Image (tube, rainbow, N blue to C red; front, side):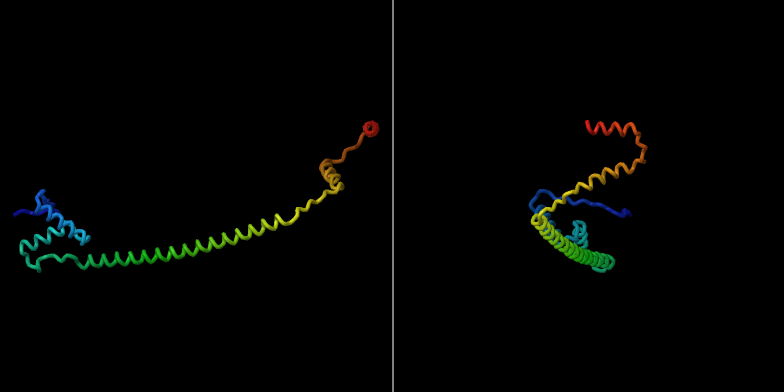
Length: 161
């Protein structure tokens, strides 16, 4: 007796005849209407019917495990959709809040710019007394040195000169 391997692949050939082309078109149309079916599924169903196999021997097209998996997938898709909606709503709210803050800051900048241009600029005149203070501070860092009497007498002549 012939033993089948776990997976057997058989091919179906469609010739360029009118009958085969119309059958192929019907198969394509059927597969478009039922995207969960494959060409292999259709061939198996046709073989079951053509060979007159009783319904009790045929495997059920969808088992309970497949239904359970599909239900879980549907539930996960709903949860993802719900999560996306909540995320986008939250981000939309945050974006609106940021836009509101930017508008407020822009208004405040315009107000401050108007205040700066309207207020006259006040220049403080520096008194001449502050200049010697600066000069004194530069000398304050150096330790006091003894002044040579000859240099002090000569400096008087230089000032007069």
